[in-house]
Amino acid sequence: AQSVTQPDIHITVSEGASLELRCNYSYGATPYLFWYVQSPGQGLQLLLKYFSGDTLVQGIKGFEAEFKRSQSSFNLRKPSVHWSDAAEYFCAVGPGNFGNEKLTFGTGTRLTIIP
Amino acid sequence: GAVVSQHPSWVICKSGTSVKIECRSLDFQATTMFWYRQFPKQSLMLMATSNEGSKATYEQGVEKDKFLINHASLTLSTLTVTSAHPEDSSFYICSARDGRASEQYFGPGTRLTVT
Image 1 (tube, chains in turn green, red):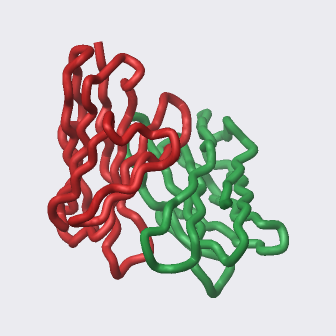
Image 2 (cartoon, helix red, strand yellow; image 1 turned 90 degrees about the vertical axis):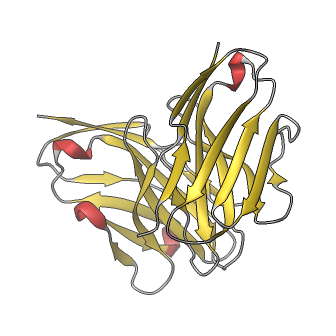
Image 3 (cartoon, helix red, strand yellow; image 1 turned 30 degrees about the vertical axis):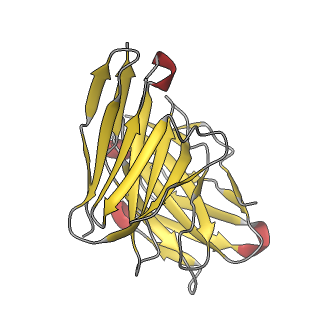
């Protein structure tokens, strides 16, 4: 069964500092990997996704993530955070095929930005 | 881009009544729609998967008679919470998938409060 682990429940970062949110997955084959962001009381917005190819994926809002198969990780990074980045971030994994695939979400990491 | 809407965004109902939540894909045909439930400060838990014109597939532990899902058209799926109880209070999020795409597009969510 597929699973996702986000080890950090809450991270606090100063505005302008760099950010890395960790995500580890478990899946038997090549997975589809996603990072979503959720602002309070809102739905999910896709930041980026990895299906295949270049293991460094660029997303929206200046985010990037690197797929490391050997470590089963897909960590999200941003070189300089902005106060508007404060939100909940979810990593998700899905099977690498087209169809009615189910996404499995991690428990999320809450990001707080301090001035 | 692909847009998914939900209606209502917020609903309060009395215990014992039923409430219907709509999920619409506005600019694409959603062959598959997913319904998630999110408790405060927790991750999304998949409740069920629905395909247009067929019965929904419920995840283990989800009462299909309590959470009625109908996917009558390629742009609309509904979730009806029957005989609602306070423990059904939650944030319900739908997502929709275009059969040609490999990602899900999420709605903004519906907050249900049962008094």
